Image 1 (cartoon, helix red, strand yellow):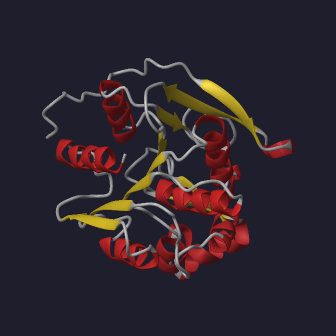
Image 2 (cartoon, one colour; image 1 turned 120 degrees about the horizontal axis):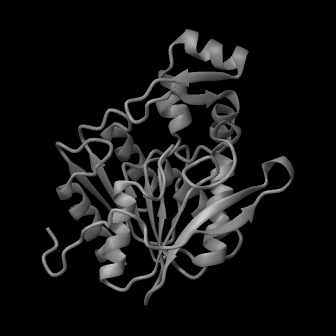
Image 3 (cartoon, rainbow, N blue to C red; image 1 turned 45 degrees about the vertical axis):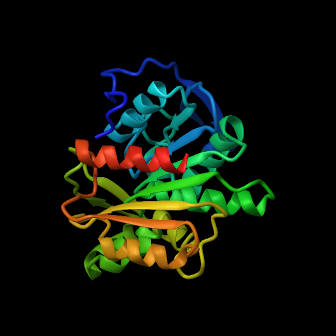
Length: 267
């Protein structure tokens, strides 16, 4: 464990919410952001599918940032947590648009990005778009069980024929999950947009060091998927840490300690 300063996530957030408008027309939504001020390059948390900025890892990272007086930005995607909009109306491109808006407003100059699960995909797509726009690369990236291309590789490709048919014919299928009391709506729009945003068919350029942490006991993002991701990242500056007994959440104290160490090293 990190011994120099105890890291304990507060029971409630002590930071006010800032909302920023993103999108136009029917897709306009208010995105909720919490910003912790500090010194040095900002660290930005990009959460996972149906997660939010008050989840265990996000708040542990915020407590770490507070203890070291580092700036940290957390936010909720459309349809997540405290942000506006309906989850079922959003797709991967929507959440990338949210991330790009938050980065431009709060962390435009070489931030450190920490992406968890789907947040890893959103991170890489956001970096690609920012590089295309001529913005500088991040200072570093930490990815936790990164789920690049998950709507195709880990969902569509694994769905039985009857589930695919329901999505194609009805436009939505409700997937039971152990992470929430209600099933997740998996829409045809989400699957189709995911195909358009696939990254693992070609090299993934980041322009900065990348550290991936992956549990080998992860039922949602198998560790072999992390190997596929590593294969597409630049050889120089890319590091993979496999946690043999780690699950998808990687939220045990020892997992969070590894995450914080990775962020501290890359930041």
